[in-house]
Length: 492
Image (tube, rainbow, N blue to C red; front, side, top):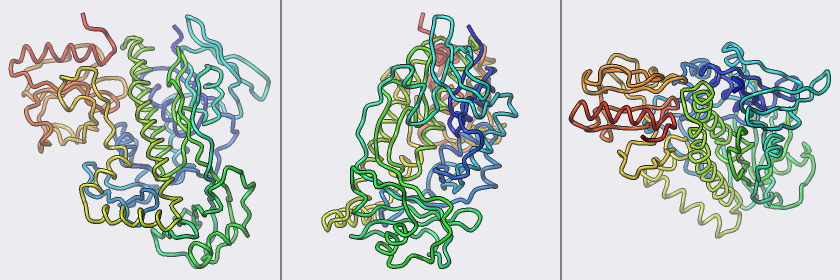
């Protein structure tokens, strides 16, 4: 089998996937139709779980230096914000960072790890056979083919790869058209400004270089008719209607609109073709979660695809990608639809609903924390196939302060499972190739980890198995079986 993967799309999702595959020892070619990186940034927010993912590859520090931490986020533009400060993570905040900078840092990382990136080249089709997949590409010098073990479509909502693989993309068309503008403000509002009323909703966020991003919706924007290009005069009128002033806005760098078309791929995998990011799910960009979910798709897929190609995992391991990530995408779409309803609730009844929900978020800390965990990605878990498995199975492992290490995240690698031996050394050595063992108990164990004597952590940071057997021999045998399952190998 070819030891090579072609990734269509050189945005954050495709670039992070390329880096993960390289860490797993797989050759990667990224095909990107843009000759240069787009300076306009659709995404501005890096959520806590994405920062954890970066930390698990020792890649987070450049992002922390470049971004601005924000201790709260919004849900449906409600007046009460979500408080991230109490979340169980080393990163209890979102990071404000333009997508262009995120892409730049990801591209530097992918290139440093040996990925090949072809800019100004466009995937036009593909053909699969028992030995691999042939990806057809149009380049500056004409058409050519790339041969690979697998092709991954990270090429957006209009994915050529998805269409070529014959994967359906059902959903609903746009009925709301929001507006977006990156402009200069002579009299900017205070940080965290938002406004909502009968005339619409508006949020204002600072950008590097003295610019500000304005995002909003008015009652006129609840339409199935695309209004055409956004003009500066229209923007100024909308902002004045919602906020009562235009903040002295001028000198637009970007004026755009975005719709709430909501679709999800029927399958995230068909044979040797897989999908991630916007190629797998399209939604209204509420809460700044879309890029983050796409990166988390790539993080789930990367180690599995590298393990199968490298012979460390069985082909069945790739089936778990759809099984685990498709429900996450469906939840994303449901959340986006719910927030869209709140963001277009301009009627007196709608505003009353918003006021009630804001009050609940302000007076019920547990509700606020639960919603913050969901939006941040920290709540994502993958239900185990065995209902009798330990409750930790499938959950995200926190950055436990483990003896002999900076923390659990520092022990994770893209090309191996991690077996935590919390018995003091009874397991004595790796139970299989592709597994590292670390002996040492958590310094401050969480209640959920009480009684756990060993745990197998996947490269993406989710718990594959947790064992409580008191007998060391039985515990080691259970660990070996867990390693086989985590590699997609059927039980004997």
